[in-house]
Length: 316
Image 1 (cartoon, helix red, strand yellow):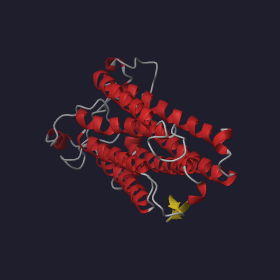
Image 2 (cartoon, one colour):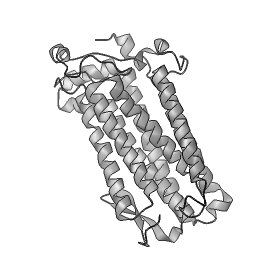
Image 3 (cartoon, one colour):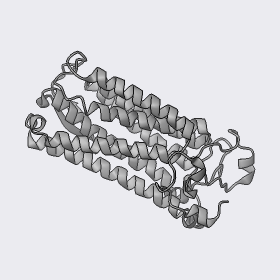
Image 4 (cartoon, helix red, strand yellow):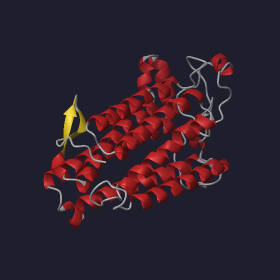
């Protein structure tokens, strides 16, 4: 069990080198604690090799699952991605949006495997798709020409930039193995996406194509999504900072009620919901910029927003 001072250290600190894992702040390193030493000693996947571990105790219930709550909370991510993909197919949206939901699902699957095994290779399956999907969604926001044909847009150039960026990041992250580097780049992509969305909503040449009610709807969806995502980030960091206290509370209330105190699991759920809302907002925005806005609207099913095509003619 790590000491209280280690568990209480802040999760993120950019005062440390982005390229020297040996200088990472304590909470960015693995906690590597287990509530069941016997199961940990018999761990099916072997020793923890990931550069990150979380407040949830390792191998508490099974030798096959390193972190139960953090693993199975990813089912919500995959379910939202599948729901979005199904709507994209049923509403005959352009393939680029289906690819976005496929990447969203890949993040959830990779995170499931990572938290189940806590292996570095599985960590890459979680963290790299996060960068790929974030950069992909960002790239789509820079394609604002009318129509979805590759011939009359900058989609090819954006695709090349997207591919080169992700190859370089994959190589550099594998070499550095510094989780703060990953978090910094991911945060940067989210900021670019946010500011690009704001720009598109306020740009005169683009926004004049869209009615105010539509722009307000997009802004509301994206704002709710970004706020939910940010709240999940806060919960994740509080879980790291106050891990020793939260662990005592878990032991006091016992399981299964203690699963509700797994902050990183709430990060999965909240960021999945936030990502879904931002995807819906930006999908609606870019569809209406590149096509006739009267062809689309946002409907709700069981409280979840979805894109509804009013003109069922398929767009390529």
